[in-house]
Image (cartoon, rainbow, N blue to C red; front, side, top):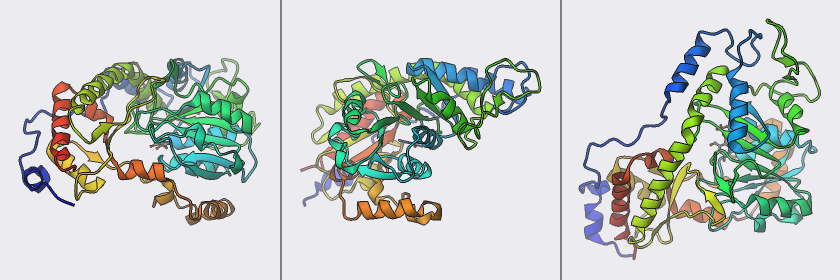
Length: 425
Ligand SMILES: Cc1ncc(COP(=O)(O)O)c(C=O)c1O
């Protein structure tokens, strides 16, 4: 391995002048809207701080958000929940599978996509991912696993081919649940993420493109699943059918399916109602900046952005992966990330470790999961997930807020990458 000494010496990481010398700040995140501020004060001074507060004639933000987000996603129903992880638990529980059934989950995802399966009494079976998009593909839907469902994650800024997965899954009794925690508003041939599988799950945690700090939602077009989803997220209670009287509950004790308390508080719902109308404008800014950066990188050898499939007609960028087919000489991805952060003054980092290597995904550490964890361990012994590993070992990512500024920012990023590319042989 030969280092290009002059390029190494000029890296800000090693004391050289950084690319970004201007004091221009990077966009801040989160970016609160005036509507969110107004809504949250309304909740604070009102008499309904959550869904289970007594009726008082005031419409809940929770129900307003459910309507708004269902319309945004292009589905008939949305049930808000407190976290993205709860959304996946509720979605899997709603399928009514048997204890110990297998669920396919891509190795390249946040730990919650798989831990939700365990929490729902199911065994996650990891799959590899598509080499172009980092998301699960039809090739990963191995019928021999005997899985009854698949949690399909749309990874970073790309989407999985859900219509193809639904078609292939139908042949083998595999129900598709979309994990859209990283894909609010993304479109596949004009259909939004979350609207193509049996159920779609969203996270509104702090880093997501739509956020209330913590939050989530389950969406579906399946009318029959809705009462079950409602019960699963609010201890076997459903929304009442009538107006109810002041002092009564918004929920009735229907008791069909035992649930948990995964309710979204009114403070969170108020913020989401205020933020959602701004999401598409932010998507447009990020997509324009993605295109500018992509064009600038055409002249930078050895560095490319993750490119979604042509069938993806709208990108929702949660994190932007920068891919290196060959890493700069002598550098590891964490060092590349550190070098870019030093050049730019904005954070670049490695994506989450694939789950078969993740310190965070250790089912055997939780006694309640014991039988499921044993099967998980036995199944995965010695299995490899090379394409998921490739993404981890050949890319760095930056948060979507890095793309919320202007063209000058993209020029800075491309310049920093060009500096690093001198180290690629
Ligand atoms: C793909 C994916 N699924 C699920 C989750 C879980 O969401 P939450 O953190 O809101 O529970 C996340 C959050 O990062 C995620 O990225």
